[in-house]
Length: 162
Image 1 (tube, helix red, strand yellow):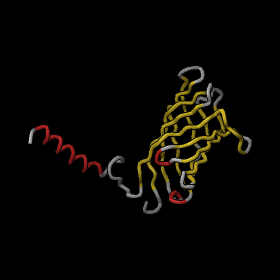
Image 2 (tube, one colour):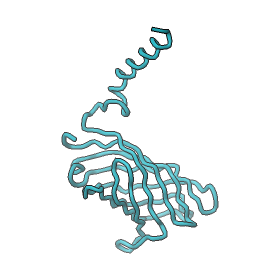
Image 3 (tube, one colour):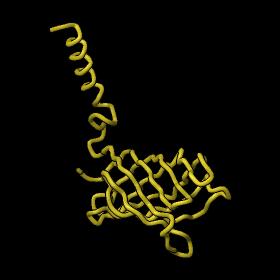
Image 4 (spheres, helix red, strand yellow):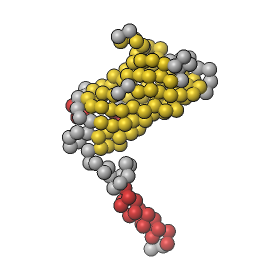
């Protein structure tokens, strides 16, 4: 075995040992899973729920389904937007999220780069009935076209043996 092969084998075996404590490796809690995907909503097609604007769109990836985002409040320049999510998976399960605040910075007059967007999962229905978790997103909001694209990632911990 060459020196390179021995180093690789050592690093690989070390990675398996360290992976037991790593969120990308074997989860410390067997009921927790790393999730990720994208969210695409359309600001131009938003409706109204309880008198406040709501966007509608889709989520892809591990939590794929339909999503509505109700705008609760915003700073005058829209660099800080507080929202409430309404999320239903393709399997018909709902995800309950606490209110969240999106923070961003303009990269042009109408294009907002989403620099921080953290959301907390606090239950739902089906396999998410006792689930908790935290997701973080980055992306863009284009106020000229109404397009919003976000990339989410995080961890979901289920109450049962999922």
